[in-house]
Image (cartoon, rainbow, N blue to C red; front, side, top):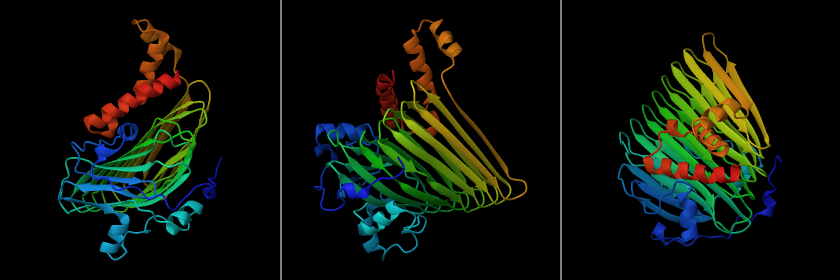
Length: 385
């Protein structure tokens, strides 16, 4: 599968009811959000944004150092956001970007104040509740100079949504000496097609850490976010953990462009196929010196499926340092036997190894979110074995 037929989905007319409190969602929807890293109580959060079907359903800012609003409101407030809107993603790139440009339902605009250190994460959720809904959003994140921010984005469908499509355009701007951690947890469904288009630019001394977690089934996912390190000393990291059960087709990649001296980029990918297909791409390009980049892609095949690892490195200046390692295989029998010798049965041993393989410790997540992801990994393992 390499294309989503957008004509099969409804892109207009599904307006969400505005919520005064995220806890007013029904029990099943609250649970779906929780499994996507979104806490409806908003405890330990600096703000929240919920886009449901075709419109904003909830927006709340709890910290004066960060501004959160619907992208439509931001376009009005800031005269069309000429420096940011459609500046990093080409609106004519493909059928999906053209559709997103044609139909703007909403999306989030998040911006820090210069120098603001936002200690508690901002959470956003892009949620599909209706059948055959086509969701088209455009998100813009601006982390101003010397500020710090962590965004947790949960993308999900309701329990009863059988078929839908999501197009998400996201543009990230990390200014001088700013730091952004962006954690995305996808909780889609067996008949949901997802085609995000994302890009970011990091200025001098800026840091962008992008975490991606997909542990639940999805019909089709195709994405290839690109981060450009445009200023001296900028740093970018991609960490991703993905599981593809039977029926899931995932074509996922990450690209880092080292365009300034003293820049560093790292891409770390962990994938498991339990019957589905994963194409794991990675690309680091270096055009300035000194610059260092490392790409690591490791995959496990458990009970069938396909993993196709495609690492790419491009050095265009003498003195760049780029490296990669890729491995696709199975759990080593000696590892299982080692754990069985210490009292675990075979299933417990295999489960322990898988949990270690899907370790999200390096993502620097808040404790509550890590607990939620660990719980999701536990649930996913029931399906794996």
